[in-house]
Structure formats: C-alpha cells, structure tokens
Length: 168
Image (cartoon, rainbow, N blue to C red; front, top):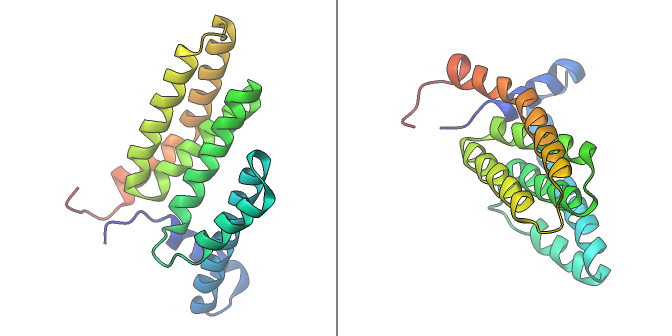
C-alpha cells in the first residue's frame, strides 16, 4: 500500500527498545494515538464549549472504526496550534505549528496536501487580518516557515530515497 514509513518506524523503534512482541506494540500504538486524539479533542473543545459537548464529541470520535488516527491526530494538533497562534500571536506557537505541519507531511501522502493547505490558509489569514501589523505578520510567517523547513527534509529524504515506488 501507498503508506509512508512513520508508523512502521515508530513500531520498530518501540520494538527495539522494549523487545516485546510486535503485535502488542502495534495495539499499544493504536490505543495511544486514539486516546491522544480523544484527549486533544476534549481539551480543545473544552476551551471553546461546554465540557459535556466536548465529552460527547470525544466519545463519538473514539467509537469511529474508520478513523485514520495518526493523520487525524497531527491534523487536529495542527489546527489547535494554528488557532492558538492566531489568537495569541505567539511566535513560539507559530514555530511549533510549522514543525507540526512538516510532521504531517511525513505521516501519509495526504498529509502533503493537507500541509500545503494549512500553510496557504494560515498565510492568507494573517495577510487578510485587518488588525494585523506588518511586523507581527512577518514574524509569524517566518517562524512558521522556519518550523516547516526544519521537518521538511525528513519527508524529502523519505519520498526520494526510502519510499517504495508506487502509482502516485
């Protein structure tokens, strides 16, 4: 299948450290990312809505069998950090957002498209925001692109040298 090597790398690294059977490791990875998705969703929604609504959304997410949990986790994490960056105009959050966008590209091929969309939407938002001053705009965009450029080489190396050939 057309799937980058993040999940196998993660499972192999955990196997090398723990020496546990590989089936237990893959199950633990799935459970970990599913619980992290639920926790991230709950924390983000609790910030903006009532805790009962956040708990219901987490329950619905955790009962979905067809959810791409790792891609969804990094996509949702990117959205939460981007919204925090927009609201607080924090350059450290912009750097973190760029790093997470770069990691999103490494996880799955759809992540490349999602990363490009997130960068374009973020820059467009900062550019069109009326209250934004030019120095803050330049600082935020440069920090996000710096974070993105720190993690982009991993994707390029994977796609050019390590990924098996596919129809894409």
